[in-house]
Amino acid sequence: MSEGECAQAPVTSVPAASTEKKKTPGWALDLVLLGALWGASFLFMRIGAAEFGAVPTAGVRVGIAALVLLPLMWLRGQAGDFARHWKAAMLVGVSNSGLPFALFAFALLSINSGLAAVLNATVPMFGALVAWAWFRERPDNSRLVGLGIGFVGVALLAGHSAGFKSGSGISPVWAVLACLGACLSYGVSASATRRYLTGVPAFATAAGSQLGASLALLLPTWYFWPAQMPSTRAWLALLAVGVACTGLAYVLFFRLIATAGPQRALTVTFLVPVFAVFYGAIFLDEEITTWMLMCALVIVCGVALSTGLVKLGRKKAAVPAP
Image (cartoon, rainbow, N blue to C red; front, side, top):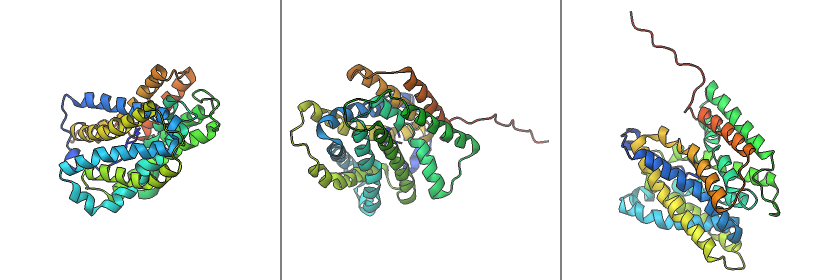
């Protein structure tokens, strides 16, 4: 997951109890709320980055998230688990939060929040590619087709001017590459979490990752801190993205996995761009073009196939035993 965040969603290990799909009537509400929070993260990052700059935006975000999650980790009795796995948890935090948050903040200086969220939807595809390289898990033909479709959608979207802001001084090519680099970083952190943090309680991994990202970005944030103090609006935007879109979203994500199962939790990937595009249009007066929507549909189809949520071909009917 990313913020997509998959979706801007942060990757953590899944507790053993989460593999049991205890379906409850509230899981659908959690899914929608999580999509709404992660979709809003692009809105708040764009507002914050305009005054803080890319690196300080990421640094303040993970710092606030760490302050939210560390007490929760302590209250749930998982501080000892973090102490035993602190190196891996903090290193994963760099690739899972620090680097991708900074890259997305940089991209949002010249790209609309809705477009960034659509590109963020490719995180599961990058996750599949990294798992293929790391664990030699070759995707089946249906998933390979999905990967191809998804990246065709990205190419079509990047090759069109819709969604890019003029006058930012940053080439649209660099903005798109920054988004894709963030998605690749999420994919790497997913495999790293699987390799080094399997079985570690989720809050220990989540809080540790935000602490690691905060420490990694501490000096760069100080170095790139803006000469002019950001406005109250920018501070409130980063407070919202740190507390709600990162800290609270973690809690919802863990609860969603426990109540609906990992496969259903993954479907939040499809909701994040919807909310992000809606927020951008309402609050930032961003343009929504037919081309953007068509490319988003192509990418979503690719994600659905590449993650195995949808498979090509028909299932073979079971043959009764003679």
